[in-house]
Amino acid sequence: MTKRLTITELEQIRQRAEAATEADWIAETEHEGIFVFSEDIDEIIAGPFEFMQDAVFIANARQDVPRLLTEVETLITEKARARRMLDELIGEMANADGAGYALAAETIRADLEKIRKELIDHGE
Image 1 (spheres, rainbow, N blue to C red):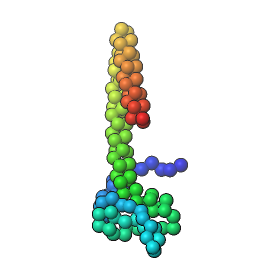
Image 2 (cartoon, rainbow, N blue to C red):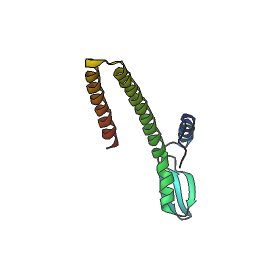
Image 3 (cartoon, helix red, strand yellow):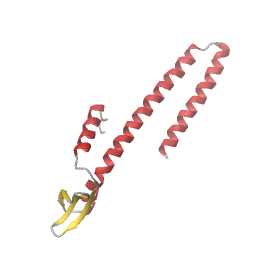
């Protein structure tokens, strides 16, 4: 099982991505082999590669890694928000008495359904 990334590790990945050569990267076959080039400055980024799919993977990492990091940060934020909401709902339930208990239970059910829908919608 893979160990979960820490916030520090995510930041280190972001710093490496930001330090990489800017501009889009492309994989192309040249007479000497398969290389990854920076599209704007026509500079070799990596290579030669034996297989085109490896070069394509590296070339796409230039835009994929920052997008993935942004998505991870969004999910971390959404998870923290859902936890806060759940903690608030549990507190409401604990403080409810008699008639308030049924109302609190209905509120919690509706709020949990809202969270569930948001999580489902995000996955589409």
